[in-house]
Image 1 (spheres, helix red, strand yellow):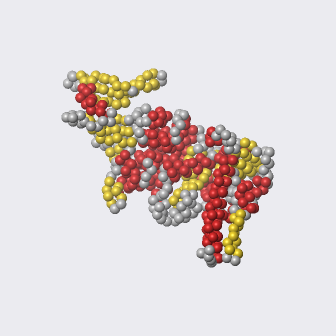
Image 2 (cartoon, one colour):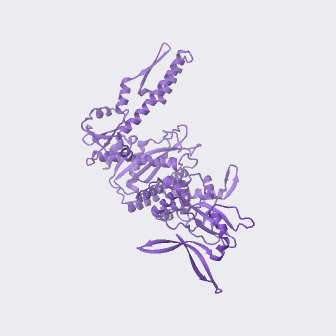
Image 3 (tube, helix red, strand yellow):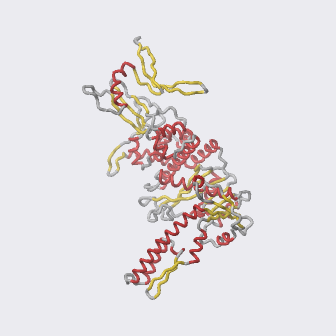
Length: 583
């Protein structure tokens, strides 16, 4: 970029010189120029040049006797919002949301939905916290009108109810149109990336509430968040080729395997899938599910539970140590120079001609499980030893109290996998159970998958099952980066809409990650967003002139991200005069 001057004749016939910042770029092999910023008349700029130089040098103290003619009114974060807008364009989300959310007075629902998704990606907050974000970031609709907070103190809430109503109406519209929006987005992804919907990955997580939550929907159940005391909902995510195409939300006490047939039916009916291979983790496996999948002539590749499985020992005994196949290592494995961890696999006889069983042995997983088992054993041993001393000292006497205390230790640290105990004549004794402990050591590092697909190679089956980690990574992004948890809404549709906004944010983040990878930019989406925060939209006022706006270039990482997304014009849309803001 560089400055240039242009001469313009005024209506009175006089000629003025204007200073512009222009940028050179190539278009079809030709060098062209575009105006980045119009700085104004040269003679007026000369008058304020010393002040402008001090401002750019971050010296804000005016010279003695010299009035400060330059005033900076605002310097809002702009880079993250700009990039989310660009990703919305690439996904076709504006048109999809316009089509399915309908119109609204004043501000289209699509623009408000954009603000909700962008907030979830950039600075996750409740609808109350979102108002504060609107003060620090330049968030505008497609007409360039900036969203501004409407403050009104009412007890502990500082946001005006009218503004809450606007965001809540948007959530209501989103959840009503969710099924259609997901299908439209899937078709867009299929066109953009040539998706082949024959392999479907599915997994489940939970997310908890602060407070009671919606009645009969927020329920106690198995908590993946370590919050069994909180009510929760169950969230199931469906991924195809690494893209989250659909999600489902159920009551918090829904059992994992009971969701499988409902999800497959939805994929076939709503998305028009033909034959698919369903890939799921151990919690999805029941005889009823496998029977239903095969009856509908669908495929499956699922993990098998290792404990309370009478067939597992037989499958492990059938392993031939000379027939292991080495699986290709992931990035972490390749980066390790010495003793990289192995992953090996082999197929064993299942006893059923329609069923294939593959045993997988992972050094990395063995190391992790062994460390966790030793930690649990040591903690259980220490608690039992302390209880043993209390019993011997007569501090705990009643057998029922002793038994209850032992039970708490055993439940908390899975003690029954490793120890036996007995109470004889008021003496508490415990010891390692060699048989059960030996079985635990035997299954460490090993897991089993089964499939009915005859044409699937062993290595491909292992690779497909490992792709479930993509779903788990998505869950971590939803919960940690996008602050899905905890949920505060007390109405079921709003809870589902809250999760839908987070799911849309996850999809947009996935596209950002893909674009960075395609451009060879070694930044995570989260780090990219952080770097983009250095791109600011600055509003300033020169004495005697109208307000002007300009953008900072941002840090080197921010410029890499903008280049990866092919964003050269950093200017926001220009609103009509008198319509610069909306609530």
